[in-house]
Image (cartoon, rainbow, N blue to C red; front, side, top):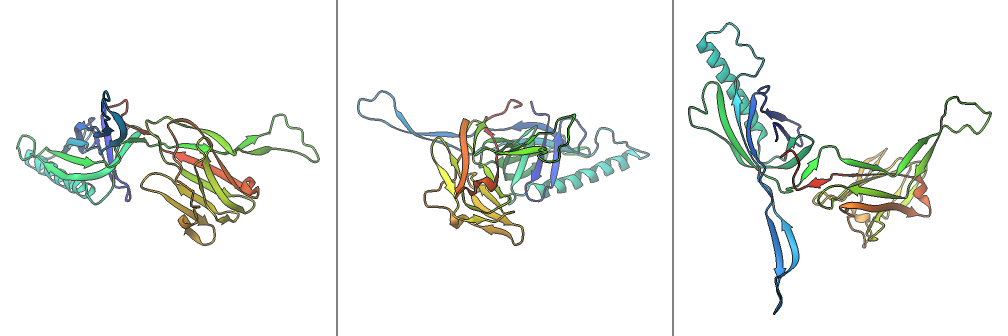
Length: 314
């Protein structure tokens, strides 16, 4: 059961908290998270029993939130006011917060709905609708409903899963005996292959960051060791350059961040056989390489957002 949510603008970070605890000016009544429509494409042959599935399409999700804008939070004091002054003050607070809500719930903006450690992203599909009943819209509260369309219907975790292909192992031990030469305090371990765990319900894209450290890197690539799918960039990274590959569906990009000249789009440097590699559900083995043994200068990080059809708190 969800007792608190927040709604925020992805770009501006403006937000409101809506809770059942009475500690905010926005009180949560109910949430209908909706479910994504599922369409299955099938075909049938003569004398076939049943049908054969050739494709499954997952539709959008349309959550609906119902709540109240109130003029008094738990812990607020009335002070020395007459009843008329008290109701007028509450009415003014309600109107101010309705303006805040109306400003945030803009159908032209991408919004994030956060519940616990999970979130959905979407846009307002119906503007906030306020009750016209005096029982639900008066001097102390105003009921509202708002509906969203989430074009990606999957719940995602706020804390992404980050896999480091480069590790630093501490060699310091106490007590330490200092030698004239050969004192090793730590070593850098570069794993060209790693097992990546995706605990979500579907395969997902990734943000792959490759940093050139201590030398130039020629034509870096990232690949799925089991399917041999790969993305290769025919480009030479200079020491300090950061290659960032985004393989998330709808957000695909390839850029290089250079220390001296900023961002450079290098999407056109992908080889013809490259694909935006997806991280499959469960366990998978992935790796990186570069031409001419220059991969020794690479520091690689892969970040994924696991995606779920539903979450345990609903």
